[in-house]
Image (cartoon, rainbow, N blue to C red; front, side, top):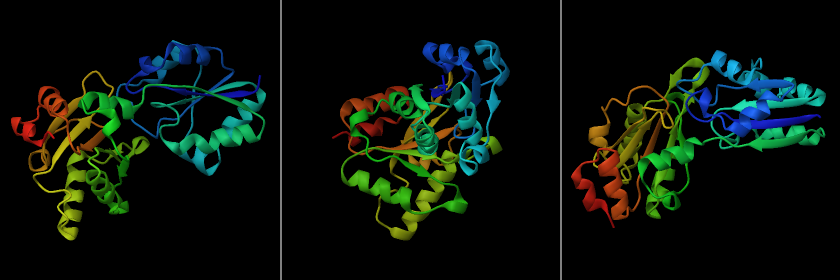
Length: 265
């Protein structure tokens, strides 16, 4: 059967894949994996290969994007091919083109979902899922724009929370830290002076969501700016209007100061 199955690996290590995903991998003729779109802190390729009893070929960004995933499509024309992706396969839009190309070439595609960084971050924070607005990525300084600042402003105007995913190049072990993101956003505030993000703005920093030892810290930016969140990957939430249960959750689970209670509406 010529088919391409996109399988989510989950968030932290080789045990994060679903039982369904593991069974599909064990019955594949060809197995590919990418590890550049996100960091799985405790993932070990050799342990994963032992788990699924398959040899896994790790593909690069160049092979997937510049070469249009040709190596995977050619395999899928010959037999059942599995493509393993950190998290959930299509939470990031990186691999949608590959799926479209496969279908255009008459290759059947399926998805086996995995735990998503989006749901993990929201679950950890205790903030209400339905009150999140548009998500934005804060890029590295060399590519920085005011888009994250503007998205936070738009969401705040609507009373909505903003999830900021911080840029990374996992294959290069290069990660934008929460401290760097805060500094850059405060610089934009100094320029625009709209009081969207100030030292007294409440925020929630998250590191290693989905791992056994995540870091979750809520505070005002003046205190978060120098907080040590430990190892990557990192995310940052700017709350909008908060229900009292949300502020209580941040105090209980994220070490927020008691002053957060006055932010409840």
